[in-house]
Image (cartoon, rainbow, N blue to C red; front, side, top):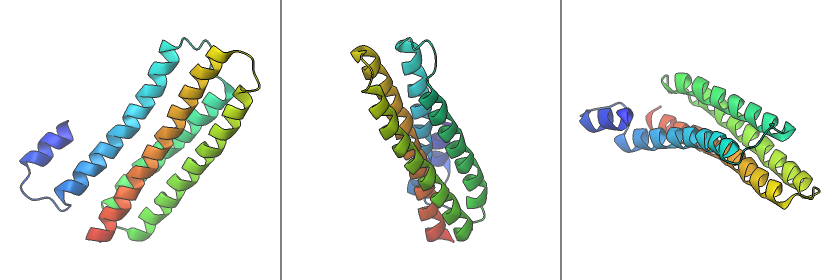
Length: 148
């Protein structure tokens, strides 16, 4: 909200207001995804994290680290460096896709339909969060192309 308020008050920015708004919105989607995963784990009373949850969490941490580094690079409008971060975000998102497929396949080999539903939704939310992180780097890339 602070970003949007400051953006509304700023007359001139080095980057288009629409691009900054999209970037802030996409960052917010990543934060919402992380919050959504945590909230579901609590609401669904998951007693112990699964191995797959740990793997997803590591992919999320790596994705957020990519975003942090990319944001620092973006300030320099370094197209080559941003491209590297976009490629890394895409790689992590692909790993999350693969992990989701394996995790869901493993779930359906169990016999507890309620647990299957709970964990499947949590896994999908984890994967969706890596999608949103990739979206952030895509917007960064577009900004750098426009302004670089």
